[in-house]
View (cartoon, rainbow, N blue to C red):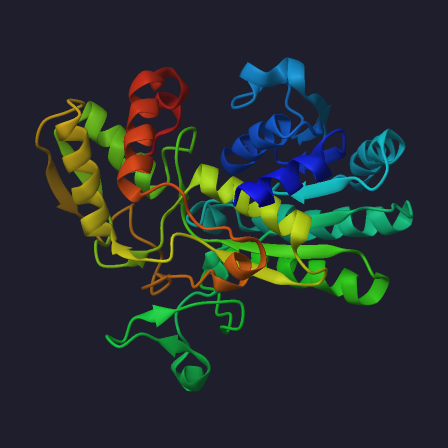
Amino acid sequence: MEKVKDKIKKILKGRTVLITGADGFVASHLTEKLIYFGANTHVLIRATSSGMLHNLSHIRDKINVHYGDITDKQALRQVLKIIKREGKKPIIFHLGAQAHVGESWARSYETFNSNALGTLNLLQTIVDLEMDIFKLDTAGTSEEYGNANLEMKHLYRFDKKGGLILDECSPLNPQSVYATSKVAADFLTRNFHAAYGLPTVVTRMFNNYGPRQNPRFITGTIITQALTRDKIELGSLTPKRDFCYVEDGAMGHINVALFGEPGGVYAYGYGKTISIGDWFAMIIRIGEESGFWKKKKLISNEKGKRGRLGKSEVDELRVDYSKLHNLTGWKPEFSWEEGLRKTIQWYSENKDKWIGRVDW
C-alpha cells in the first residue's frame, strides 16, 4: 500500500483537481486527502446567501473555492473553463448530490435534478469545452443494489449461510428516488465514456460514517441521541449494513480515480455486515467504555418517522471489494471500533455543528 501511496503522490502533486459537493461529508474528507497529496485543489460549493463553509472552513486558505450549482449549466461552465485553464489533464471528483434516502421522497424533484441532471450537466459541459481530463470519478452508492430480485436469483452471490454478497456484476434494484437517481448518474457516466471516450469511472461506496456526517444518518442519529437523551429512537433494527469509515472511503475514491479503468465500476466498503441493532449496541458500548454516556434505553419504531416508506427498506448490503483490492491493494484500514471512537469523539466535541440539524 505504501508503494501505491507513493504513486498517488507522484500523480497528484501539483495536479489540478475539482471536487463537486466538496463541503459535504465524504467530499470534505476527500478534499483534505487531496491537499495532503499536494494537489492544486479546487472545490465547487452550492451557492447560498451566506456563502458559509460548514466542513471546509478549517482549510479555507488551502483551497480554491467556486460557488455554483451543478443543476445550473451556465455556472458549471464558468467553473470548468477555469479548471481547463488551470492545468494539464485535471481530475474531477463528482460527489455533489442530495444524499439522504428518506429526504429523497420529500424532495424528489430536487433529488433527481441534482443527482441525475447535475451529472448530465457536468458530463456534457466537459464535452462541450473539449476538456482533456485525466479522469472523472462519479460517486455512486450501495443503495443502487437495493434488495435481491428473486426472479434473478441466479445472478447473485451468497455465502454458505445465505448472506448476500454484492459486487460490480450484481444486478441493480433501486428502492428509493435517491437510489434511482444515482443509477441514472452511474449509467450516464458510463454512457459518456462509450460515446465520447471520456475517461470516466464510477465508485459505489458502501455505507459511510465518521466525523462531520449529517446527524440524520443512522450512525450520527444514534450518537447524537446518546449524547443528549436517555432514550434512543430508531426504525427497524434488522437490516444489515456494510459500514465503511470515511477516511477509508476517501482513499477509495482516490485509488479508483487514479488507477481505475475508464468506463469501469468499482464497489468498495468494509466487506462485512452488521445489523442496525448490533451497530447500536456497539456504539453504546464504546461510548460507555469511553465515558461519553451511561446505559441507554432503545425504542424501535419501524412505522414511525424513522422507518422507510412502505416496503422500500433495503434488507442487506455487503460488498466484495476484490476488484479494487486486486487493482491497487486498497482495503479498509480502520476497524469499526476505531472508526466509531473517532466518530463519537467528534460529535462530543462539536455539538454546535450538528445540534441544529438533528431530526429526532
